[in-house]
Length: 266
Image (cartoon, rainbow, N blue to C red; front, side):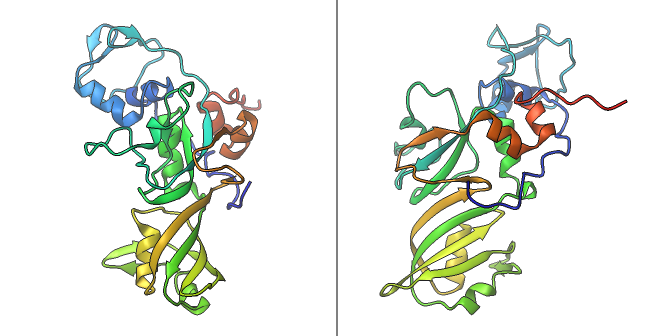
């Protein structure tokens, strides 16, 4: 499914299991939301209200959220979702605009997004039940390539695009190496394919503006090994558990419940 630099660089151990991460693993909310719950006094350890999200869990700790025992961590799940243009990648919007999460099937469990897509950006958005996994996959160090199809107004040469291969600094912000090619140039617009690994805010649009182009359509076609494929706008499809485990690597797959931990050889 799509192209990437291989498996995510996930066999390195993740950080110790802090309480907010454990709540995210249990599927109740994202790690960031869990930190907010702790600040609100909704989380207790062994009957004592927790004061800080920096607490590292012990094996015999009894965790409650709003007085209810924390459910056991469930295996992470991941979906490919074709985000339509005009939806916010947010759980709530103060301005009342429609969000991705309001349009998902009602039978879907609570999910968080792996990164975000802008309001007018469409295409592949990964959704997961595991907030800690989402945060891990968002990191540039994970090494997964994000590919975009870009329609932009203006003229550009392949030589111009090649200048992005070693990275570029725009308005004091350093952007990493970008793979870019011209697909076709119908009329006054040009279609490009861009591949990048960082996914900074409005990165594609700023790179295009740097080259004298104005983006008028932006579609993410893949994120690492997962591609948009034939998903129609608004459609969603779960990534098979075995495929997800294979792409994450043995260590991370075990940590999020997809595989049993491997025993060290004697």
